[in-house]
Each structure stands twice: as C-alpha cells, then as structure tokens.
Amino acid sequence: MAKYLELLIKSDTRFEIIGDVTMGLVCFRIKDSNDLTKRLHKRLENDGRIHLVTASVKMPEGEEIFFIRIAIVHIFTDEAICEYAFKVIVDVTNELTVGQ
Image (cartoon, rainbow, N blue to C red; front, side):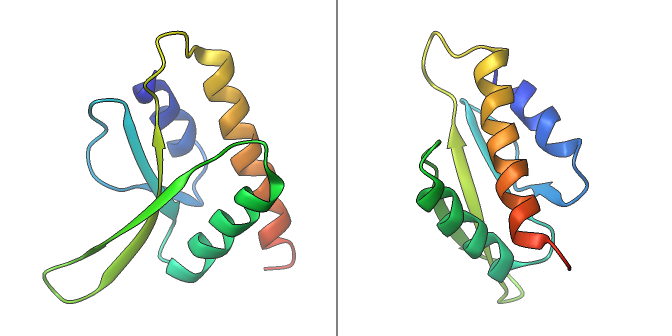
C-alpha cells in the first residue's frame, strides 16, 4: 500500500517523494519548500483527520530538507484508506496555497 500511496502523491506535481519507499514508509514534501511543508504539517495536525510526523535531513551540501512521513503499517490498510489520506493532504494543500 505504501507504493500505491507513493503513486498518488507523485500524481500531484506540487509534491516530491524523499528517498525510496521501503518498509511502508512514504516521505514527501511540497517541492522545494521547507516553509510550505512545515505549514502544511501544522495545518494537517490542526485539521485532525490524519496524523503525520515530520523529519529533516541535512544534505552533504549543507541544505536541510524538511519532510512529512506517512507510515503504512497496519495489515488492514487498503487503497481506500490511502486515497482518503491523499485527499486530506491535497485538500489542506489547496487551502494553504490559494492565491500562490
């Protein structure tokens, strides 16, 4: 299911996947924007429909990349659940980026 969620996230050109999707972990961010990604995470938490965690990594060039992590680990997670999570992410991103 993590690979399915990865495909959903990749279908929206505003997002980028960070790293390889393995062991049910999908890491993504709004392309080229730590600030928007942080704001997205805060809005998702305030929204309350899904709970996601964040992380950051410092690249060899010194740049820090902030991203959101989704862990798909429950045995009963199916496409409908992935689609719901993606819809929430898109809805909140749309609210965040209105007028930009």
